[in-house]
Image (cartoon, rainbow, N blue to C red; front, side, top):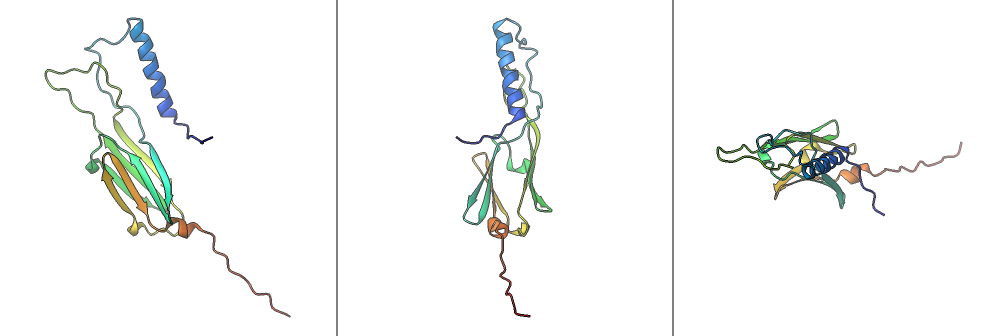
Length: 152
């Protein structure tokens, strides 16, 4: 059995969509003039994996420009923050349904002691931010020093 992280924001959005579907069936759906894009709190999904002694962080950021993303390390905490901007309606367009979440986001990940922040690399491809933290797991391994017992 796999352990899944509970996402309270995702759960609330799922419930909101289900309520909108129920209201639509009852004829209480918002009229076309009421449908609009609003900024809603959201967090991109992330995966963290080990690759040898490196840690690799993958963040799903579809629709986000690399220019709208910042990656920082402060006191061994990796922070990914940015914003997914809403697309504007054109003169002859209006939203009938919009389920995409827009707005600012921030994710933080604690890194092991001894990580060199200047060695961290990041790349962005196909809406996925990939961050490689070299030798992070090697620095986290416990180091044992044998103490010799001498005679008195």
